[in-house]
Length: 348
Ligand SMILES: [Mg+2]
View (cartoon, protein in one colour):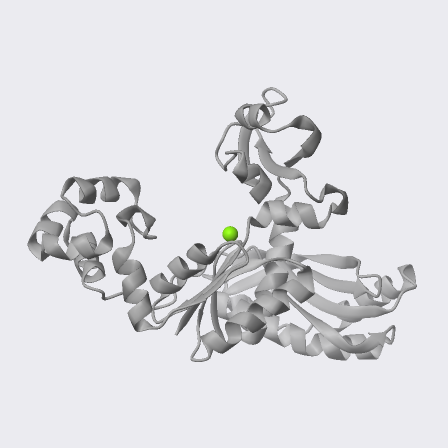
C-alpha cells in the first residue's frame, strides 16, 4: 500500500503557529519582489483567505483588494524556517515508516504494508509534535494515495481499497489527475474524454499518436485502471536532520550525547544514501519551555558521512549548556551545506 502525506497550507499554517495572536485572521504569505512595496505574488494563504478568493500566484496588490485590512496579515516568506520545520517533520515520517521519500517541502510518499494503520498515527504524531494538520491518503497505488489526500483536505484521512481507488480515479475529471497538465487535459477534452474512464475509449493508437509513446501509453494504462507503482523521485534536500525525545528532561551532557549517537547514525545513513558530504553541523535543543535552540559549527573542508565528530558534538553540547539554564526535552542533529560526493570520494 502507498501513503501520501501533504501538509495543509504549509507556509501559512507555520506562520499561524508562531503567531498565536493571528487566530482567526487571514494569513497571506508573500514573495515580495521589492520593486514597489506591493509588488510580488502570494505564495500561500490560509483557508479564511482562500474563502475570499485569494490564491497562490496572485499578485499581492490583488490580494490586498480582496482582504479586509483589519483582519489580514501579510507576511514575507521565510524559507529557512519552513525548511527547518520540513526537516523535523521528515524525521517523524521516517521514524514511523521505513520506506519514505520526501516529494516536496511539504509532501511525503510512503510504501508500507501497514500504511492504513500508520496513517492516523502519523497524523496524530505530527499534530502532537508540531501542532500542525496534514492530509493523508492511502491506496494501492501512489497516484490513488495522492488523489485521496487532496480529496480529503484539509486535515483529512482517506483510505481506499482497490475498488474504491479505481472508482475515484476513473470518475475523476482529467485535469484533477496529478501528471496531467493543462495542455494534455485540454487535448483530452477536445478528443471527447471528460473523465479518466473516457480515456480508455480513445484507444492506445490514438493516444500514442496524439501524445507520443511514453505519455500515450501512460494515459492508456490510466484509463484502463492500471496505475504507476514506485515511490517517485526524492526531492533534493538542503539539509538532513534527526530529532528525538529524551527519556526524561535532563542537563546531563552524557545523556544528551548518548541520545545524539543514535540520531547521528540515522542522519549519516541518510547522507550516505544521498551521497553528500556536509560543511555545517548543528545540534538542536528543545528546552522544557518548548523553545528550540540551535548551536552550529562550520568546517572549511567538507565532512564525510563516516567521520568522527565526537569532539565537535561535545563542544556544542557544552556551549549550549553554558548559555542556557533550562532542562532539555528533545535533542537533534542537523547536517547542512551539502557537497556532492561525486568525484571527491578520495576524501573518504
Ligand atoms: Mg501542502
